[in-house]
Image (tube, rainbow, N blue to C red):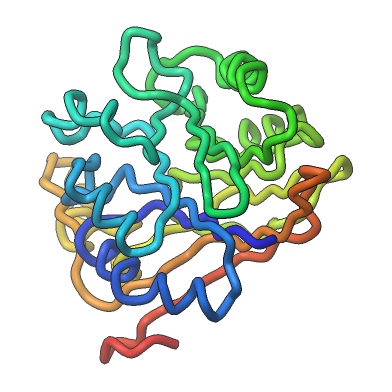
Length: 264
């Protein structure tokens, strides 16, 4: 079976890439499911229930989040109604939402898990212990796919090796820069340090270059709006054995528009 895990979807350009291309990509690649990180989908920060439903209609089966989970003020009251959305499971227990969900497909099911890192990130509970706790709640015969939303490459790599053989995949998100280290670890877990970004690539990780450049040059705070222009859809395709719950292969994926809007 094959599953596509998609890197951080940024603003309306990222949403457009999903809306206009994902169903075709599913058919071309023969995908059995799609997981997308959508924590930057609403104007670059957070998600809304309406956008979550739009993603599902466009072909996304499960949605993960991250440090911008609460970027839209109404979302805390909406998240519990969204059965295909997970937020980091190491947020405080009092937060609404869940850190893992069972996603039931027509002929199979899988668990999607979201965890946030601690290095160079806001304070959260230990991601290692959080995933241990969630794995104890998930039936052992269910394939598990983990979005580890973290900054530090060392934390992501250590985390993946620690859980090698216990989950089908650990895919890093958050940096918006796709890495070249996709591989299956010794005990059968697929790993990539970062899936990359789905959004405008003539940008600073999805944001308009002018205010970002001004901030670097002057140090004066500025509003970083989502960039416009041609976009990319990035992630990784994981081939796996659902019965053995082991990855067989992983390959980075990228579809990038030309400046005229055509895919390439």
